[in-house]
Image (tube, rainbow, N blue to C red; front, side, top):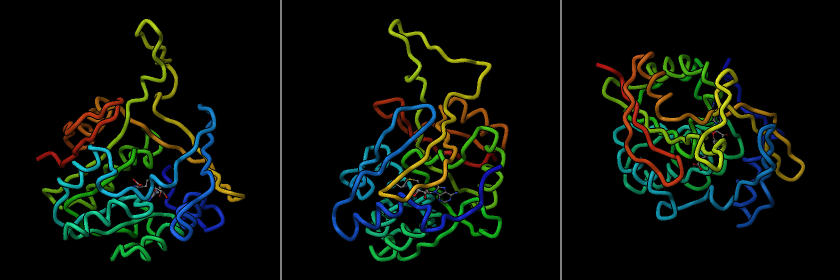
Length: 245
Ligand code: SAH
């Protein structure tokens, strides 16, 4: 089941890091834990990247975004601000109360604390943006039908979803170029994360990295067509998903 909850401020480590960086122009370490990987960090500064600092996949998505745009999991609002600069109409949503507050202060005109999967969230858009591996919020492959159903409710007939993700296959690559993936196990792109900023610890959550082929299969089964727009340098890519006609 996909969570439809919002975060309370005391369980919002990324939002706290974003708020700190916004106020003081610097932040502590935003630590990331996972049962599958070693401890890692998200450089908070990168959450405030300008359009010029964005990877090509993201800049391409911004250029392709048209009409009424939904920025899902908008974080500090970097993509929404770039779209506003280009006079585009964008609604930014995030479950993080602290991030939404920062977005408003940074000038994002339409920012709301909304969970994408909340059934009361019922508007219609021409473009739905899910950037910075935001396929993650789908959590698990088994949630893809629910995700596509939600997308059908939110998308206008000729609308599309622009989503970037990564194929985690490279993590399982052997020196001889073969892969050690347990085909009977869970899909290798299903991971769990937990974040911590100062003494604020978030709950553990599921995050989905999905390869393009798997995404295309699920899209076709759920009435969508997947198109590869651009491949990145490191197993990452930007896909466009549109309703099958
Ligand atoms: N898009 C931003 C931030 C990516 S991090 C950037 O590129 O910098 C992912 C964001 O998604 C976080 O801010 C998190 O709070 C938000 N999020 C997670 N699940 C969500 C959901 N179900 N609905 C809306 N936002 C969600």
